[in-house]
Every structure is written in structure tokens, then in C-alpha cells.
Image (cartoon, rainbow, N blue to C red; front, side, top):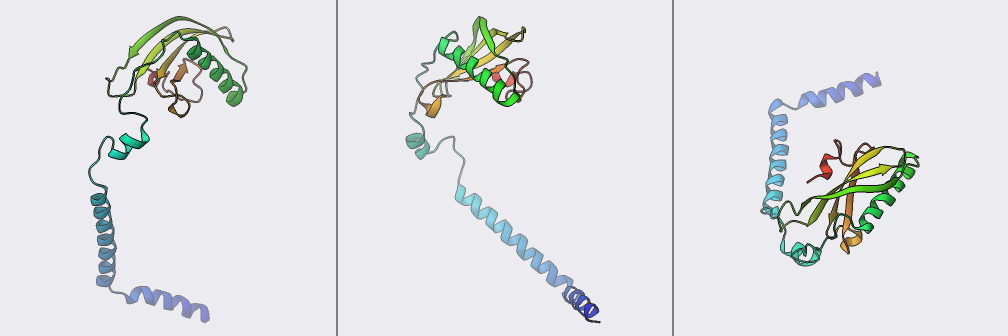
Length: 175
């Protein structure tokens, strides 16, 4: 008996509200949500590429120097070799490494103009320790190193991009 009474009270509570009351509450919730969205959009203002604080505090300078090493810089090639070996060992349990580079050439320098972060895009033939010959695409990036204190390297070896960092087939590593 007790169970029936509780169930009937709950259903009576839902049925007790008229459709007009339910519609009114729904409209109120929708109106509050719309008002909050409009208020948040109004407070955000217009979108800008960089604001005053970003230009003067967060970025190290307002313009780029364009001082990036050449594609055949031993430090860049050594970084690619060591990071490739570390990635293969750490994540894939493999002892594959890059043994050497050949046919190093520049593909592009600052392809998107002087107002963007300078990058030098390069390509090289690479000899892999498993006996294969592949292609590595890499870019040298101004202020792309540790804490933006020096240049950095972004690279992709064709056929060895197992983590899909530059899919498909290293295309996103190209200019």
C-alpha cells in the first residue's frame, strides 16, 4: 500500500503542473541561457590577432630577426638523430636510428611572409639503421627551442611517423 501511495504522489506531482506552467519554465530557462550567452559575447569584444598585453608582455619582441641556421647545420641534424632514436626506443621499443644524411636542400624560407614566425623548411635523404633509405622533412624555427631562447627543429621521417605527428605521409611538415 505504501509503495503505491508514493508512486501515485510522484505521478500526481508531474501531472499537477499544467502545460502552460511547463512551457513557461522552459521559456525562462532558454531566455536566461540566451541572455548569458549574449552577455558573455558582449564582454568578450571583437577578436584581434594580438592584444596590447600579448604584444608587450607575452611575446619576446614585436618583430622577428629571421636568424635561422642553414639546413645542413650539424646541430639541427644531430637533434633530429637523437630525438628520432629516443622516440623509437622510448615509445616503440625499437633500436632503429638514423645513420646519416645526404642530399640536404632548402624547400622554403619564410613562406608566409615576414609577419609570421620565421621557418626554414628543409628536406634530406636519410639512411636508417634497418637498411632503408627514406626522406626526412624538417623545419628550423626561430624561437622554437626550449623556452623560446633559441631556434628549434620540427621533423618527420617518411615511413617512420608511427605516432602520426605529421599525417598523412609527413605532409604537414611541409610548407
